[in-house]
Length: 174
Image 1 (cartoon, rainbow, N blue to C red):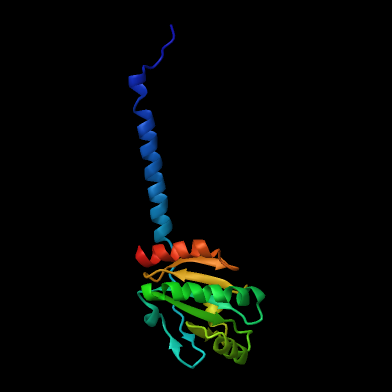
Image 2 (cartoon, rainbow, N blue to C red):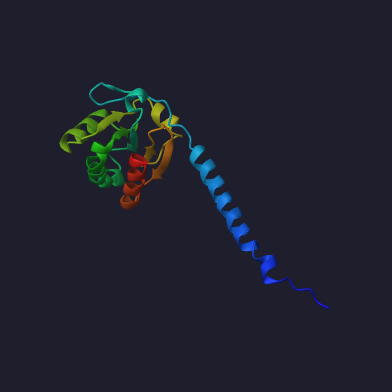
């Protein structure tokens, strides 16, 4: 005689498995979202001598873009960064373009002026910012920081802008 389970005695398995999977995904999402590292507490030196402090950026969604005037990808993406900033600045986006220590300050100032960059431009004169953000050496490298001061995403190279815009919309309105 072979024992077989009746359909009613196993009907609970699928809902129980589904509930377990949903709980596991929720737990993973919770820990992923809550384990985002805090953005470094770095004060940037703006090209006009101003200090861009963590306190001045607090409560905003911030993009920190490490770049160089000699970087072809950086120069290529910059108009798209300007468009992105202009699209979202009224919703609370702040943007800091940080030229690496290796960039000549007069090149950075000239580039920002001739391109009429609408956002904050800084020069990492001693490499402190690049070190604080995880030894940034490749440009462009862009960090998106949430209103809570935690890093949401790091892009090495030019971001895919449609995805970046979706991420910013979520961060700005979430």
